[in-house]
Image (cartoon, rainbow over all chains, first blue to last red; front, side, top):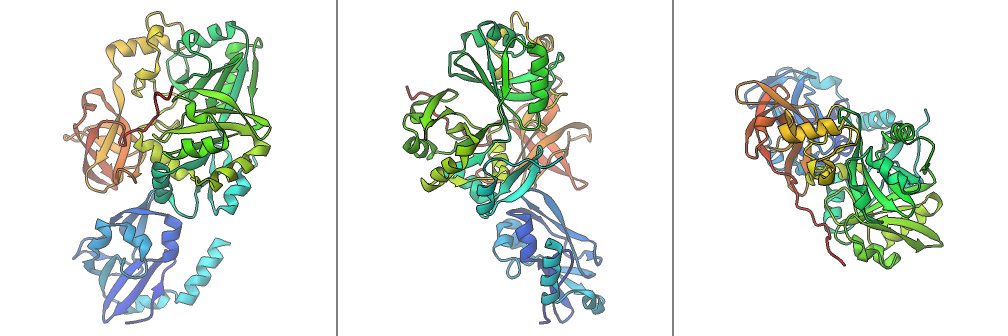
Amino acid sequence: MSEVKFSKEHEWITLEGDVATIGITKHATEMLGDIVFTELPEKGSNVEKDGTAGVVESTKAASDVYTPVSGEVVDTNQAIVDDPSKINEDPEGSAWFFKLKMKDQSEMDSLMSKEEYDKFVKESAS
Amino acid sequence: MEIKKTSLNKLHQSNNAKFVEFAGYEMPIQYSKGIIEEHKFTRSHSGIFDVSHMGQLFIYGDESLTDELEKIFPLDLKNLKQNCSKYSFLMNKDAGIYDDLIITKIDQGYLIILNAACKNKDFEILSNLLGTKFKMNLDNSRSLIAIQGPKSAKILNSIINGVDQLNFMTGNWFDSDNQKLFITRSGYTGEDGFEISISNNKAEKFVENLIEKGAQLIGLGARDTLRLEAGLCLYGHELDINKTPVEANLRWAISKSRLSNGGFIGSKKIMNQMQDGASQVRVGIKPEGRLIAREKTKIFDDTENQIGEITSGTFGPSVNGPIAMGYVDKEFSKVDTKILLEVRGKKHPANVCALPFYKKNYVKGVN
């Protein structure tokens, strides 16, 4: 598996072969608060880089989930739809959102490393 | 304008509060445990709420004060006993609601608790109506602390002996730490609880004492989910200047004895609506599944006609599902009516349901 990459919209992504797994970061869940509703893209649909690919709602508000890369949705995580609180518990592990079959792996290049993302979060907080 | 802070601001900070601006005040929306934990803790133990941003209006006067206030509020104040409280409204002549409030008869006058966002305008309206005959004090020197939940009576009574003898919607003065506190058995969470009016300079120590006895600070986020589960209105959402108490399904708050002769501001409209019904009314709404329908969500019937709008919607932690309130055309207001909610461009099924979503635990007859 590739190293984990991050987007400015607070998604994380890993690549295995040409299939990317995408979720939201721990920092994102801390900003959102308790997540109580999740909507995921349909299997078989195509999503475009930086386009919306789902919704998370906390007790406070609804937020769009963006996809950091383009591709066809090959799997979604029903467990977080059935119990959205799993996203708060393990956002960067078992609570992944969807898997994409990527068309253009070079889209990964513009994303941030862990170190760059942590710096980005720190800077946007100040 | 500079943001205002309550006397508990430092305490909120040291308890890792996340702040939001609310009605010009920096208020805690939640602490480190989060809204759901805070909500559940209030339902099972005891939560402390800083509601010092709300207005505490003391009005003093002779017996004519009661007559004057009866020209304003739809209440039978002449028969209200001292230290008893009533929920009511400040209305315009069309029965549009300026504010909803709690009024308590106290020695030589009344104490009215007003919403933070409305309090200054309320003061102006009431000053104009009452003239200069009575002493009015929108008291900024006092904080207001609510303690809510099943363990609250025991916790508060261990600090101020005797509060557990108060009945629901009554209050009294109590002595503690060399000062007088006005305490009512009331609140806005659907739980048994108290609201404590206390001098600003004593508030922090008092709350620290409550925390020591096992209560915990709760933010405005959980206050909102708690009141919504209890089916209670929030001004600016369920209530505003374009809504009447009858439309808001708050007929119970209008004293029966005032309906025959009227004589309060808005009485004509109220009496007409009581007779003919209002064209739109407030209802409880339960979306099917887990979908959350928030404020401003459009409500449709099954033939694509818009029949109303959601005024508050969230996830109810104790209900363990989505809940909402809104206004619908009268013919759709019956419990179990099927409706559709438009969320993100799609229509989702929901049902009109009875309020509250969560059953209350008020203490009625102590004495």
